[in-house]
Image 1 (cartoon, one colour):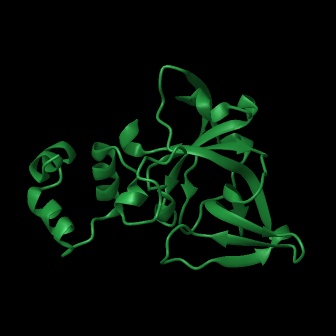
Image 2 (image 1 turned 30 degrees about the horizontal axis):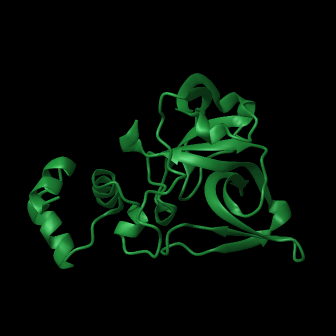
Length: 200
């Protein structure tokens, strides 16, 4: 694909793409995602990370084999935090997702919620993306929806059972990892996938 074709298909100006290629400027996360989608490559690979070139299989687009799940009437913060998530926050509004996300998971536990903030962009979860999580599922380290200090957050978690602590890890090098007492964190569910805003 030529530089001009990439500019045309992404809507990013030819001069901006030229400045990205030359290394004069770094693209913003939304620009990286647009280019990665058009080029059919993983955004992290395009950003220079040592990952496979193919798109991350956790980023699932809805296809013909879809299921319908409830949508949470509250944004999940990838930043400073939102208020606690309760049953009252679950809307009658729904979203269709690929049934691939439900393999091995009780479909009745799946919920969808919009993300706000930029603290998970290195995990390729961007503001406006829809996160799919399984309510009540706790299985190994990974990305979770949690309640911490009265905020509902989407963060990566690492557990230390001996110390009874949890590392709350932001997927953005500009935000520090917080190590907190495990009892201070309410895990609402594990993220099983996400859909980029530009995909729906």
